[in-house]
Length: 245
Ligand code: PEP
Image (tube, rainbow, N blue to C red; front, side, top):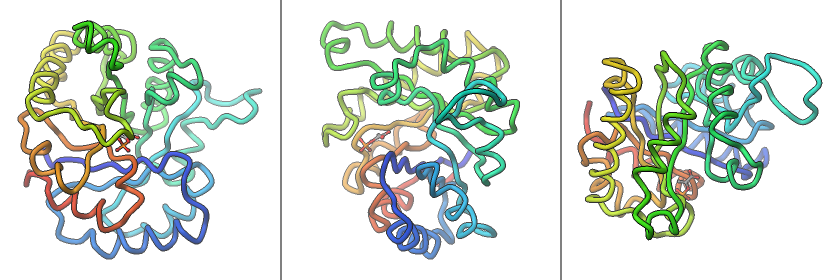
């Protein structure tokens, strides 16, 4: 399976800068060995999807509500994301878990809603620095997978150690190898053989300088990229470092 390089723009991207960034990414996206995905803020979904129409680059949302529709002021449903041109949705990012009190149960319900709307969910898991220092990382991650990943899941999991997100302090290739192998085992036990088909992304300070080493790790199915996805040259350099499928 080809690796997936996904850019999470977070709360960045006004119209003008989004246009410049997307045009540069689109221009450099041909002949890549990987799949590319851009997850802009909600306000940019429609224009970004329009600019990428007919290209090999997909578009995704950064969150969705679990309900199909209703009285949920400020929220976006999975069907709305799909309607805006999204094919993927990031769920349970650590910033949503920390800033919006999202629990595994919320993420589980959102993943079901995303799949029902025809989207591929990218479910994020990962331990905090204190949890790793205490040696709890595998217990934390297996608990998140058990709570967040629904039965019959055919989406993507992103391992994102919280201490590596936006800090410039990436996990080592050895840490990533151990955790991705562990996650694969959990998914196989949880989902049966289908757990072998789930792409497991690594996220946390992926940059052009460390991308080749991290993307070469067995069981790494791609990268979820925050900061570096806002610079077209860096995002494309990471994509070029992907392992040929
Ligand atoms: C992220 O936002 O998911 C992320 C991994 O950010 P960064 O690449 O900036 O660490």
